[in-house]
Length: 226
Image 1 (spheres, rainbow, N blue to C red):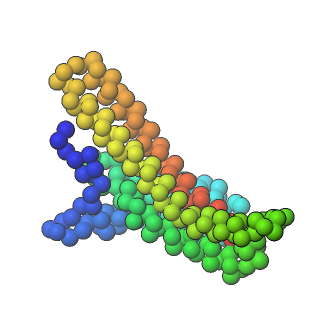
Image 2 (spheres, rainbow, N blue to C red; image 1 turned 60 degrees about the vertical axis):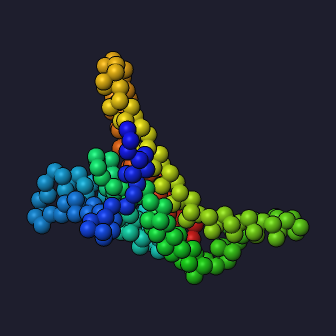
Image 3 (cartoon, rainbow, N blue to C red; image 1 turned 90 degrees about the vertical axis):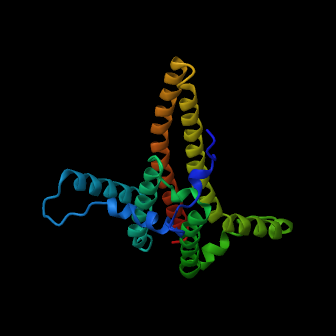
């Protein structure tokens, strides 16, 4: 109970060196690859899920937008596996760090915006000024639309950080309460422990949903600019 509530969000170190890079590189090692003509059930299920996700996200895109399919599929797999590994005891979740999420969101957002200005500059500039806008409101609307465009990567990163962090904090608090109540009242402990199990199941769903939402929003930004 004396443990710092935010201790699990501190970037770990090994011999004084940051271990976050090794943790970030670890999830891809969990994705199995097959060298055989006939795959096993795990690889077949993995390929089916990747195909289903890719098909759902790429349906609305044109030929130019579909060139991003490999990047978007890799992104959703990376975020999902990182979120799920962070639910393990005594583990570190890189997606709770706003700096890392910004490092993912800003380049992807900037790539979609630059592509939009290169391929459809008239449509890209038209977003800053909706049709039929009264003349006195033009400067204000241009400023508002510019701010809304620039805030998109921040919204992406903050949404992912806030959802994952809130879930981890709630699990930490309920787990500490379960441990404290175990020596006081057994029936209450069982109730709190049941809530903790249900919350863990919910957090597994949140980990997958947040990975999908992050990638889907990047996909929508890409669709608006291609």
